[in-house]
Image (cartoon, rainbow, N blue to C red; front, side):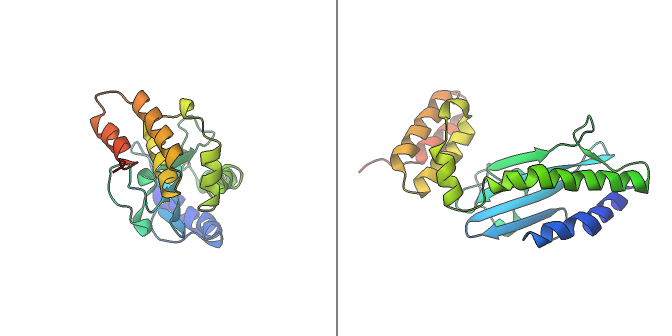
Length: 197
């Protein structure tokens, strides 16, 4: 089945549902924005062909992207978001197959919409409002189960919310876990909380 046919079905059957829920944009990435909060839904075509991936992302405009650049909310893609998730399909590839026929393509798009309804909405619900959702997230953190790069994002959010002591604890946890060779990550962690004068 042609990729264009599958994406045509997405635009006909799935995109209108996303638009009713506040997502907008064109191309294969749609965004929903509220204050500094950005939700991204991205359809990524597989480089091997035959299927695509449904990627979800959440970002806050005051956070730099993982590459260290300022975030342009209306241009963010899922890969540039601080919080990411992929809705896998039942296919062994984890991707949503284009199918060998129009009926198979339609079944795949229907399955994708079901995955969105059951999993995608729940993911975004965890990050529904700023600052409320993020205060709840910070209150429930266990730094021992987090990677250094995630500790960096959460420390930046804590600092933005004026939670300086928590930001310091997250930075310290991140530095303990961060390998010495990750000099850029270590430097970014150290910059989160300005030194006392």
